[in-house]
Image 1 (tube, rainbow, N blue to C red):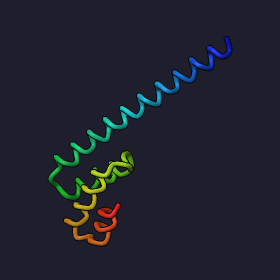
Image 2 (cartoon, one colour; image 1 turned 30 degrees about the vertical axis):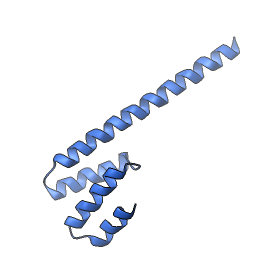
Image 3 (cartoon, helix red, strand yellow; image 1 turned 180 degrees about the vertical axis):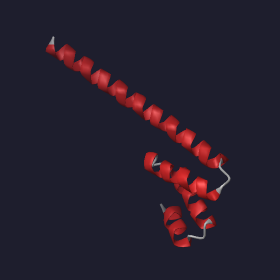
Image 4 (tube, helix red, strand yellow; image 1 turned 135 degrees about the vertical axis):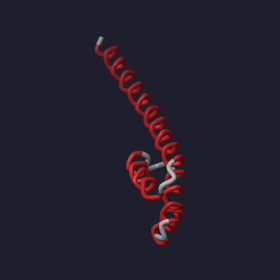
Length: 84
């Protein structure tokens, strides 16, 4: 009985972690769409800061962040994010 309960708890934990990963990926996609639609550079920078916090492993957000920093003439910062 204890072994069965352990298996159920493990499966439940695994299901929760997979659901969290899917919702995080969906959230990152929504953030990227908002960034791409924004035309004001300063507002785009604010959205990119949020994207960097929430989706720190997303290469496309790093690229968008670097491109925006370059357009804001922050070339050193842009170069470091292009390299990441």
